[in-house]
Image (cartoon, rainbow, N blue to C red; front, side, top):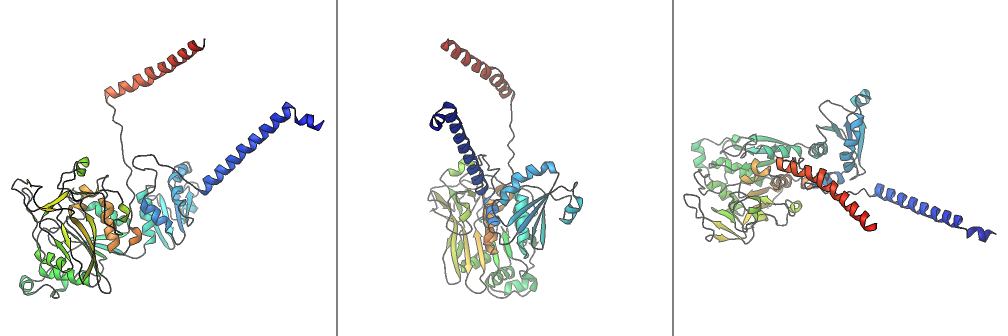
Amino acid sequence: MALAWLRTRQTQYTAYASVYILVVLAVLVAANFLANRYDKSYDSTANKQFSLSDQTIKVVKGLKSDVQLTYFGAQTDFRGARDTLDRYASLSPKLHVTYIDPERKPQVAKAAGFRSDSALIVESGARRESAKSLSEEEITGALIRSLKSDERTVCVLSAAGEHSIDDSDSGGYSLFKQVLERDNYKVRTETLRPAAPAESKSLAIGQAPAAASSEVPKSCTVLVIAGPKSDYPVPIVNALKTYVEAGGRVLFLLDTPLRLGEAEPPSDNSDLLKLLADWGVTANKDLALDLSGVGQLFRLGPEVPFIVGYESHPITEPLRRVPTAYPLSRSLDTQSGSKATLSKLVATTEASVATTSISARGAVDPTKGKRGPLTLAVAGTLSGSPQGRFVVLGTSRAAQNSIAGSRPLGNRDLMVNIVNWLSSDEDLISIRPKSPEDRPLNMTTRRLTATFWLSVVVFPFAVIAFGLITWWRRR
């Protein structure tokens, strides 16, 4: 009797349905478990709008103590905020996120540090920093500021017509300053006053400067020399020498002294070049030309070397295949000696040449000159305790707004990585968050007409026609 019941169709159907339900439930449970345990997503947008940058991942995964993120907003906005903040929280168990509605819980919001001009508060120990918006740039910047308690100052020298950090024009350095401040650097202009002319002539390279006003302040963590147009007096060169050899950190951005068109070329600055040569770096009086043609894809001429591959160094390691450009750069030669250990950072391919012959109209002969590869950037470490560090680039235009603000190029990351290495903040060296890219859809009258006919007429009638043909064939 029991065997007959088991063989009935209803019993078999019930068994199949039960097994099917159990299998579906098991798959759903496993999928939810794996989704909670391994939170993975794929960002198919061209600019990786929904992916966190390398710097954010590096900073959050490297947390050594608990960090609290507190979001303030209407409860209806919590879901949108979670899209961003949950990506942060999934990187480290030490990062915690709290959502507070200031209107519903004003006392709780006040105790948590709510401010009307801040969307997010980041707390790390006793430090509290705010982010004005939920953009990755703001959140990661606030996170870095909360973790870096020591004061670090980048001083940009102003003594011989250098680029200005407050200049927002294409040739200014305002974007460079902005990104440095997001990494919790204080950026200021430093003016060194040389000794009197009579005293300057009597000094030789290597002698201590006579005037105390020529000394680089000890408060400068990194000193930036951004393309001097005239010669530095000997006391200032002596001050740079004393500063670096005593453990200071300097970024030298030099331009070619060749005349390019009608613009007045910068001075040779021979005393400064002698100092660099004493450390093993020779800045050649030439112009590097990239003849590979790769830069033409970005509408760059041969006078703007376009680099994709880099030498092995902590500064360039995160860049991988990120391109950078070096407009009107001079080439550098290196010779490691007893004073400094040198590492090449950026070099052109063999399809390049360093020319010294430029006509009055700016024309060059690419067949004449030193053949590549050409070194465009060098990093050096001086022997001694404490160890001084310096980086030399063959152009100051690599950090100006028109190049640093270009989306396809990684010059912004390269320049800030250099400052990170100089200040011994290697943990910050990475690819930084990029601002959201605005891609408007421009529709002309012709495109609007074509879209209307395709969506309203062609596609619907095609579906109807396909259905009629299928019905006719079956009949």
